[in-house]
Amino acid sequence: MTTSVFIDGAAGTTGLEIAERLGGRSEFALIALDDARRKDDAARAEAINDADVVILCLPDDAAVAAVGMIRNDRTAVIDASTAHRVAAGWTYGFPELVGYEAVASAKRIANPGCYPTGFLATLAPLVRAGLLPADWAYSCNAVSGYSGGGKALIARFEDDADIAWRGYGLTFGHKHVPEMQTYAGLSIAPLFSPAVIPAHRGMVVEVPLALSAMRGAGSPDALRAELARFYEGSPVVSVNPGVPEEGEMLLRGSMAPWDGLELFVMASKDGTQARLVARLDNLGKGASGAAVQSLNLMAGLEETAGLRL
Image (cartoon, rainbow, N blue to C red; front, side, top):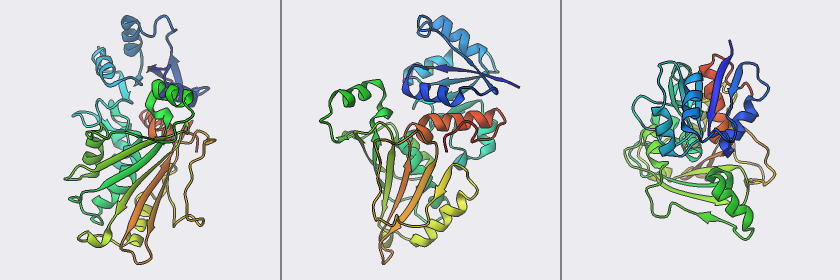
């Protein structure tokens, strides 16, 4: 059976990449509005209610308004904005963490944020397993390509070649923190330090661990083994068995679209310190790829169909 899909906000970066992943797939029929109608609320409402699934690639307020346009109990929603990520009645679209059946059976899915995807993928399973404490003041350091900031930030970086690094969220209260705390099961909000680099795509997210100061913390080997067990068999998430031989990690400006997620546990020789590291594409598993993965599950298809892995 063909599933009809409407991407509201299809002209944005996330929407365009979702459409590319769905292009040529007979399982889906895309409902499209021309440029003259895509900002017309009446036309959007009609498309939303005609679709089996609507994918919202909109700012938060617009996403909330779009959900309010639904006048039936049939249309399912995948929201790529921040608006519903910790909202009651919404399923977090990270099937590896919340369960594949939970995503497959959901009518309202909140697509995870790009930074939280790396943070949660490394930390949440270890807190659940009791190998790391839930009451620790964790920090998260991360860098991303500029495409995650939308058209304005893309234009800023591409128009100003002199920008080498952009740190932001310096006034705290970043909108990703609630989902990071909620789905990692933490009693203390993490200290989040995001930054943008002059690359179109790609992301590295790190959680440093002072293991010797943590009550009941597992060894680096135990942390790595638990992540490997947790993601065993996943076609999307992989756990690297050790530190890269060259002792460094790179993001390249030539990175091609990629929907996978690579995890590392790096540790000092005496095991007293460790670094949980995730490497991903902020437009892949961090945005568009995650939305398509959830859509596949909702449609009863293989989760990797159409993904770039």
